[in-house]
Every structure is written in C-alpha cells, then in structure tokens.
Length: 275
Image (tube, rainbow, N blue to C red; front, side, top):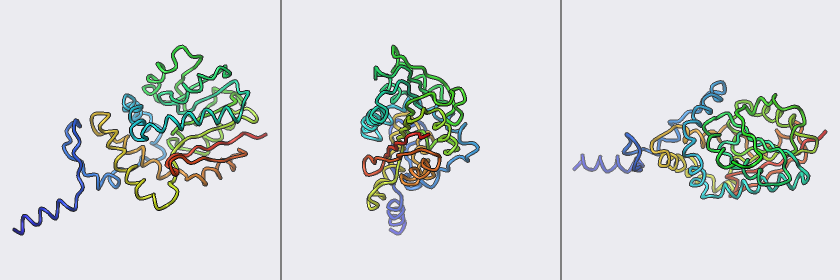
C-alpha cells in the first residue's frame, strides 16, 4: 500500500506530456524544460544561432504559424504597411535577419520599391526565402546584421527586422549599423518579442511561451532540437518595450514609439533617422 501511494505522489509531482513521432523520446518532463536549457555565451551566440537556424529551417515557417496561431502574418503585414506610411516615397528597403523571407516578400509586392534586399546569415533559411520572392526584384544575400559595410551610408529608405534583433550578440552595434545605412528621415521598423501587459497575464504567457511553444517545434521538426528552447529563452536577455525605446533614442533615432500585439507578447518599434 505504501509503495502504491508513493508512486501516486511521485506521478502527481511531475507533469509529463507524451509526444508522438519524436525520435528516441517517449515522454518529456516539461516541468524542468525552462530550467534545463542555458543560453549560449555572447561570444558563441552568432555561430550558435547560425548553425541551429540552418538546422530548423525546414520547420520554421510552420513553427511560426503554430506558435502564433497565424498572427505573425498580420504583424508582418503591419510592419510593411507602417514602414511605407512613415516613408511614403520610399524607393529602397533592407530586411535584416530576413530568415525565410516573410517580410522581404511583403516588401517586394510594393511597386514603388525599386530595391529590396533580404539579408540573413543562415544559408538554409535563405533557401526557403528564394521560392517566395521568385520573379520579384529582390536580392537575397548572406550577411551579418552587425556588419553592413557592404552598404554605403544612407543606402535605404526603410530597414525592417522581424524577430531577429534579440539574436544579435551586440544590440547597440547592430542598431548603429542600421542607423548608418538608413537615409535621412528613413525608418526602422522592428518586430520582436515583448513583455506581457498587464502583468497578471505574465504567468499564463510564460507557461505557453516556455513550455508549450518548444513542443510545437519538436512536433513539426520530428524530434527534439534545442533551438526551439532557445527561441523563447532568448527573450529573457532581450530588453522590454520601454527599455528598447530608450536604447533606440540613445543610439540617435527620433520619433521612437512602439505598438504591442496580443498584450505585448509581440512588439513593433518604429524609429526614424534624424540628421
């Protein structure tokens, strides 16, 4: 009787989810998922992110659809619409950390944009962007968002970034490079994760983000991959809405503001280049 009781108590103390189709994994203890994963050091982060994004490229689009309930498509539409509203006569746009090309493709549909460039340092992610922009006047290149020396100062009217800023190892350096390649009065629109508002929703948001979202990735990828743990955990070292707004101003941007989506789960910052 005592042994049976101990087993019942042990079962109650652990939350386990069965995941079908994951190689070598019958059960995963999600109660320890958040504590087991450790982010890479800042020095190792660039290569870690590049290598692991290469590895999950095939599942990335479906992963975004599932974990955002397809809302990321609406947010990306908003990014492009706001960028064009801010610079109505824009002729050139650069989409940094473009990944599989969702925002790049949306930019390419604007007939007024004569130059659209998508840049990412994951070749595999770019391989999934090429079919989306086929036939469009778009240039896709492998590159580092923190080193845009291939572009002269004042090259673009618009710079966009979707869920990439938190992956760079030096946020301020990246923002300085973005500001440099923007034309005067050009606009930077950044879409990324934020802090949930109001605070009483934070527990539910964290449970979903840290425990459920990785499971979507495992299911779509077909097995466990630590990149699906990295994506939510990377938000822990990324500045909140107000802090990023302050940083953008300190770097030299003006008219900086942000818009929350789904109570701040995702946030778009809009910043213009001054003199």
